Length: 97
Image (cartoon, rainbow, N blue to C red; front, top):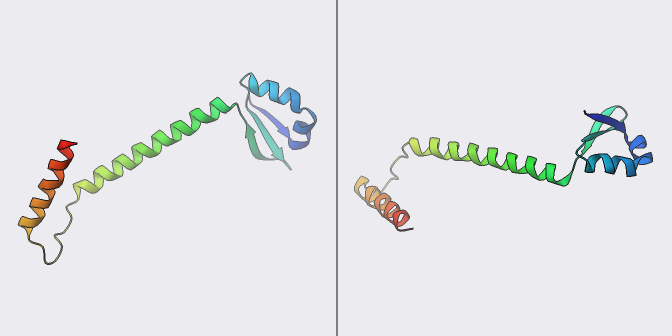
């Protein structure tokens, strides 16, 4: 069950609020009727941050994959053969670790 308290109410009941949060409850704090903060257990926050990081990593991975599918133009003054050799060298280096 979600609980909402004004900051004044939370201040007056802080020890009880901390106990409730420790037991897993999330409490939304409001100022002038608008939500301004959510009090949660530290482990719940770590999980949320971890999920966000995984989502960001997955999005970045897809952007990199998409970019790799788009051929890059050969720079002026560099032959296609030279580019192919450089790419082969990079790939060989990656294969070696």
